[in-house]
Length: 501
Image (cartoon, rainbow, N blue to C red; front, side):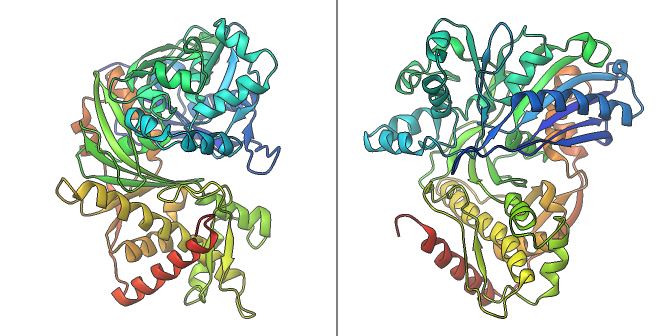
């Protein structure tokens, strides 16, 4: 075991950047967090300033180490987890972005995606990447930047520009520009990475007109990625773990056995089902993706992606002004006996899995004169559970066709999982026990676990699984008839917002 017994995890999310220091037991010892600005240049467009993210990353790294009462010598390794698909293109020499980052929620390339589907490209993309053609993923975002930033395409073809998701951009900056790399989980979300061969695919790169020269090297999720510049924290610290946020949460939840499922509730909601060493092709519009890659061995997952979960609560606060803090929704949901027939379909940037309708838009149904803010807040929380039901039903259908049943509980994490009312409603709607871990920061914990494995802080996956602890288990208690009635109402509301009814 190394003398330095702590791991620093960078958790770079959609609305905030956090850093958490974990000890050998996987217990948080220090945390720092900063929110950053969201930019909405046009309808359906979402951007971030990479320089904001970089400044915040350095600040929270230092803040978390300070709060833990440690120094750089106490940190054995750094792990990075990040908002996936969000696309940055930067100058290889200077490190300067050529455009603001285009966020995973951004829908500006929907028309291009529709055109590619109409041209019959869907089966090719699906077969090689496990993904559906959608503007959610990185490929069309890269193409848009190359087409709309003057000179960018020519510079990319000359090898002067780098593409990366946020992990790759931060890695380049942390290492002083020495390393341009990513891990297999982030690469698998690009729509140009063959998840079977585990390499960038020249046919897909040509389809999306992306020069291979700008693509990062793809490493295992637990690997030697490089070391930080010494002046950032006081000494050079190895970076030994990287994974996209949802895969990191899967790892942090110790979902290491086929059939285990976790669901993370942050800005969006993402459920992953571990399918082991063989990719499972979905017939239900789920995604086939890389869960993690260790020692050259790939573990796959089925994934369902919901674009809006916690972001709907943020809209209640910043858009409608009916709450001042997200925690108020718990009290509001319990203040009324039900949602009074109100359904909120949060398709603010279209619908994700299993619908994949980029043209759908959010709506509230069932409003009457005696419906109030509490009913709308409750409907926003209920929508999270209903969308999770959509995902789980689809994944179980894909998995159960050839395998035994999934695990007997859903492991949940993310900020919204702290809401007891929501966890209970999830169990009721799913008719499945819901388990909330003692350490709810499982995304950062997963990044720390991957980094700590390579650095020798954690012995093996079995040790990480043994350290997982359940804080509370929520058992379903809703009457079956009520469950059917509520979910049928949800399905009707979703049909009403679909572009193709």
